[in-house]
Length: 293
Image 1 (cartoon, rainbow, N blue to C red):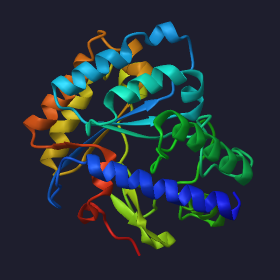
Image 2 (image 1 turned 90 degrees about the horizontal axis):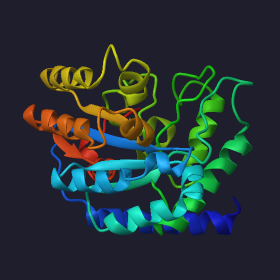
Image 3 (image 1 turned 180 degrees about the vertical axis):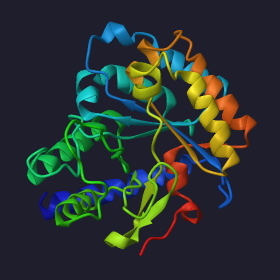
Image 4 (image 1 turned 90 degrees about the vertical axis):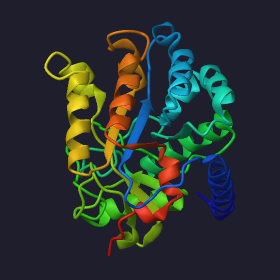
């Protein structure tokens, strides 16, 4: 990215953060236990297999005041532009809905040598994804969620020069939120800042409990009951509770087309005194970030 493009992207990122800031609705406290629900939207198949999903999602989330962040792959936005544009136009002034990025082609960062994309390919993929985000949502993303991809990965951004360079690339592209991915921290439980990598302005957020595990691959042995138990357990340990849903799993592999399980999880979280938040709300309150050195 040349200097002019970088400066333009920086300005767009600042504007995006400002617009998100106007939408935040909750003032967080450092002692709050946070329930962090997200959808990785990455469906790549026939559109009719997702028919009705966004309409039902809007209905359920609004009726039950359930905030969520949508980490969208650029490829999905390209293939389903009008669907996502209509979804965004319906909810863009509603603080329950937060839109961020999930790479263009569902790529893996921090892959071991020979198992992932080159540095330039990674950079190009994210630039392409941010561009389609700006086109569909009229603003740049300020956060990404890491993609689970085949092959061996390093355990954190602070492992070696390769992983540090990939993190710096994301910082230079304007990212302000990414998974907590440092050796010293539990990425399923802790918020952080990335001051240890020279970027105290970037938040790390907890991630875990993917429905590809409990709601798809191991549905018969885990299922929604597993998440209900985990919410109770984490509350007892005074821990934050991340929950990673996927558009295609939540719609095609759930027990019904009513998103009943989503409402059930939100009810359980409130029962155990969690505050339900979007990722951008967490970014706006640095008191919950753990400082790294």
